[in-house]
Length: 354
Image (cartoon, rainbow, N blue to C red; front, side):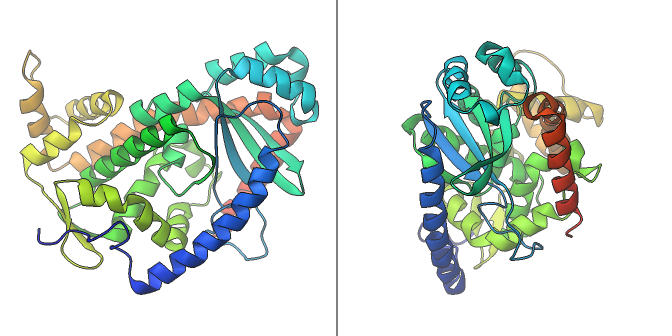
């Protein structure tokens, strides 16, 4: 381990710096357009961001394609928010809107990953799919990895449309979690692209859509290939701040593989991930005796086994799988049958663009 990234963007090549500048200009234009969309909602939105192929270009898709823009609105009181929004935008909702705001808020919070989506909504000439989530649920997913549904999407580049101080801290913690989880799946030396591929793939681990043709099987490659400068810029300060990770070349990194260093990293991960790691380790045959004070010894033993990369991947899959499935099934309620079928058809078409 010989050299640190010299600055927040020091890991970018001159060509990537130029590419990043071009991307920032495009982002500013999209941001202005989407903030105009936000202003069409009277119900108060505390924090908002946009993500996905409608905002950030992905490799493998034609330049003429105009995907639906994915947006997330974090609100303080979902029941009150939906009451105001149903009164203003009843057409955005399926039959659930007729059942009232309490029913919508119940479905939002009790089924799936705590998000309620309204897809195929056209505002100011832009077709969007917007999800509503409580501030508490979003912050908890970022900090604790309850479902990784939104936290996983936020591992990749997102476009913030409305800021919130609390969310800024939670977002940074989430990115650090993602970095540490990815490091468990990687060897001692690896490229920047391999690192960001591992990070981008976390939210797709265990997602049933990847197995049934609901997503492009090359989606992770497409995201990283087209957005590498954004990933580098987004994670530069985290790479620089981690004591167990350093650059040994322009695009080559090295991590400390010592059990003590890796175990210390794992103990800073969310309890849900750590519990999954222990559970999968035991399934793999790692003997981890219980008892007070055993955590440090057990963690060092766990991270030192040859299967740790697979164990870490399965721990993430254990978090992602169920919420991803139930959230998709919830779409029939929140979107209605017609819109749900149209959405699945659009996803299927995109999955064929490999």
